[in-house]
Image (cartoon, rainbow, N blue to C red; front, side, top):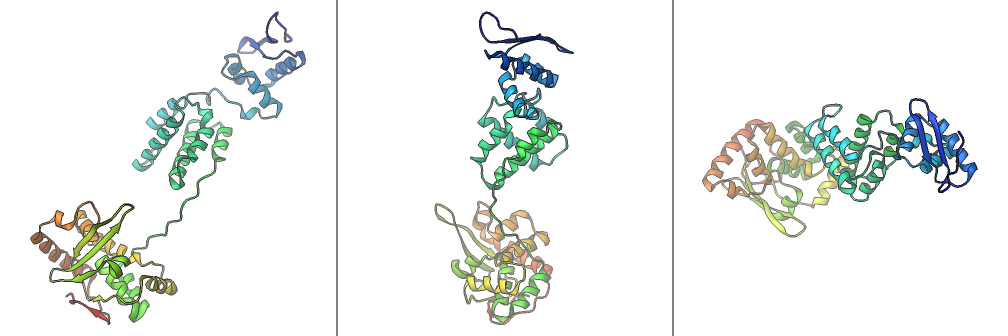
Length: 349
């Protein structure tokens, strides 16, 4: 049956489709030729798409525009018209593959981000919502959400290639390059000290056995006492300068007096091409504490981490006892250390 024109309104299409039965669709157009093209389109579209049009879930004009430009594959399907909130909830509740706690938390946050922007979105709106999210989140945070959305589409809509392509077309965010961390073993740290020579080698080793960062060593101040090495560590925050890193660590060897500058030390490491940065000495100290089996709260206190100072964690008598125990355990772990020249302080046993 060809399109017919009722007394009022636009042309209608009224015909029988296999498995669908009788379908009546108002075209919204008043030109007979255009209405005839609409009917030709319906004959070529998948029946699932015709049903969406008949159910008024897909506007016939949207389908016609896509069909005219040869983009039928890009038309919404019954699946992509489903509410996004329900599909996300089902995916989070029963993921296709088991994921760890970190990934599960990232997926949950992503769902909250997306629904916070468009609570009434359908699955087909995901590309647009993801682009909105890109304007809010930055760097790795957005990229984790983008990866979660790709995983969602892969798991819930494996046959919907167009949707997957649209999601993948949303560009990833640029991430700030973070310098890799390279904490060294005791043997590796000794080799670096020897390679740096008489000027910088003792400084590298001093940072390794105290856990001081370059700023603490050259600027904040430190001194050897009968109890250990008192480090006047100060941490600069956006609002103020804090004393969160003031601490006492056990004396594990002869410490070198500061000479030169932090920049000169960094350049020496770079010239020597040893694969480490000045801060890797502090990271090495933290690694040794862990490798030696010290309790986590002791490690935190010795490197100046955590909300509390050492004085709040221990009474002074307890600090001395703790430092003595740590000194013995760390010297046993580090082993006999060749003393380097141009140093001051009390030699550890």
